[in-house]
Length: 428
Image 1 (tube, rainbow, N blue to C red):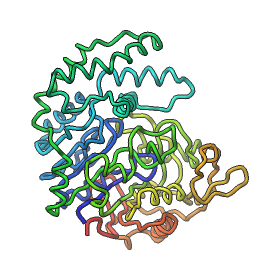
Image 2: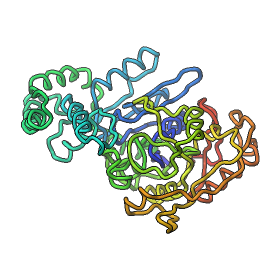
Image 3: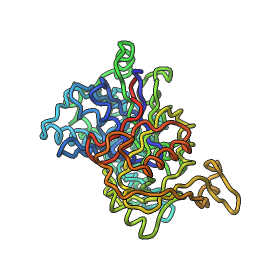
Image 4: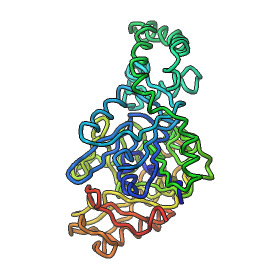
């Protein structure tokens, strides 16, 4: 099974980087196919902790080819900052490849992102302010800057002029900001060109050739299903396709090359930014869960909103993505609870919904219908087989499996790299 997609099931921060890292020694290629530096992966290797924002987490695995696919928007300053930081810690980054068709985040994208969000006031979406949305908007509007444009100054200048012709009117006349000069943008982008050139490739061709050769290719999604621009809680979503379908369009391989779809979900739920969140906790239990799980954004440092596990969302994500295997992370965080609530359905103005309501208004007003499961007190961080878990922890996992619509293949029981229980192999 050479093509494996890893996607988030909830609103992100589920531990996708750890799942990718788990496959590291059997993986030949890891591809990031969507998003930008608006999401973070934290990977713990021994006593070392690595926080990655733009780079695919597979770059930490020796011998693995890491790819930034065409579906990603790239902030070049962030790219080289991360590469230099890893190099300083002795990580080999020479196998990184960047798609020539990936779009670039420029200075005017980050400026527009920040001023536009402030302009929305109470209607803010909760973006990270890193220019991701405006860069994707330019891509769709066909005025974007691609990686390959850096190697032809005339084309680069023409494209920057075309983009700024409209944006400067918006910045000056609507947002009361100064105009941005073409020269400053072109000069900044060209300063990265020669460092970037050796990394740039026809990555779609290379990935297809790797799959033809029987290599194991992991497609690593940023963000998560409920933040997908088509299938998430719109408009409180990201600007790219964060679902399994995005793995094909964002990397340049056909969907028939995707053999296994692995969904990642926490044993509870979190989200960052605005938008509906039926199981959200606002009480002391929420504070306890956030503190115990250290639920603060890898990229932004913002406190995450926290809530109980939402089974309808997992069923929805399983259906949308075609998930074949679930990875449940952070089971250990629930240790110590007498009872563990799980959302099994929603109440919307007296009507029961067993699935995620298609109507945004209904979902916004959804109240979770909870079922309670007995907790456990034992430390489970040392468990490496399912039978080593306390019986009540086993029952919790089996209940989630039954409600989620697909099998739970891996369980995370701690922050360490090897703190996992494998019930079903993700590769074979």
